[in-house]
Length: 426
Image (cartoon, rainbow, N blue to C red; front, side, top):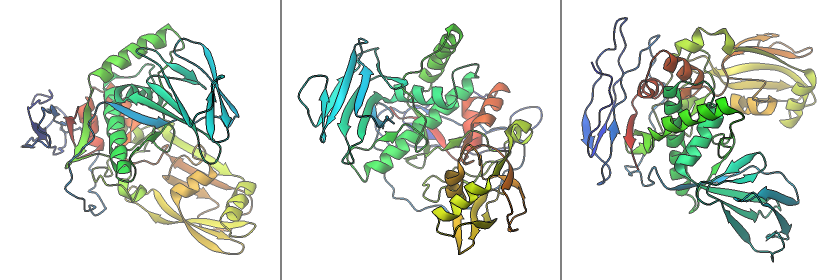
């Protein structure tokens, strides 16, 4: 059967996943359902992705949801809060390259030699950027001061420029296959809109963060050489082909989480993120990671790091032992028991990763411990595992390899988000 994308007016297409035989892709099934908006919507089918191993069913119970339609369109501007240094003076270059500075005056901002104001806004203008810190940003920057006295900088930027900045940071713009970029762009756009929708229910001016609390975003990509410049143009073209395309489940944007590498099988999304509304982040096999030694890791936590962990959680002066309390279907650790010389505590594994360092304790897929789980610690604690990141949703390492094997973005997304569909929501 043809692997081309199906396009229908005022329709949406849902997906049923199927296994692939050795010679060709098996048939996939489409059914049309009523569009949720009166305007024209271009709906793309997600072809069934080739599966390297049998897929397990979602282990969690679907979360009841209101039958509310998606309101925010996949176009226009978004607001991103930027990470900024805690300096008294903020220096940046405007769209013409002129050096500017902002000073805190009480709870107000004085731009250059002008009188202080509650906030100031600097616009980049068409095709230009504002350089601040290590980033260059399109759109505009709104600069104000938090009640704590820290800087607050918000970048108001077109959604597609934001997605470009995210994909360049998250997947890179070097020698990357086009379909992996396209899959990452659709996932990043979906994540942004899903979270802005949810946050918009609690506040009138929802925003995204530019780091690990949301998605890595550094503004306009800055190629370091001609080769990177050529690659960036390829990236721009790939992303233009996805403009407005998002993942939908029912009538909601999919909270499309992703991570660096899964280690062989992705995690069930709601096991890692209990608050997750989307049910299509179920655990699936990922053959590229399963067959790669590059995703394996080891790290030893020093005694002083373990003792600091015990003190931070009021368990005493020393950590006596550590053991997993709960695992998910992919054998990832969900919770651990920390035993100190005074008390014991249950801790979610993601909190343990955050405390010890996500770059050190790289994933919840822990394959071995020394001393063994629950045994008394003498010096340090050696971890051995696979994968990098929380493991839910799109595996970037897997997406890159599947794209090199000829999979389309639609197939990649069908594999990692079974049950979702793609629509143009501009």
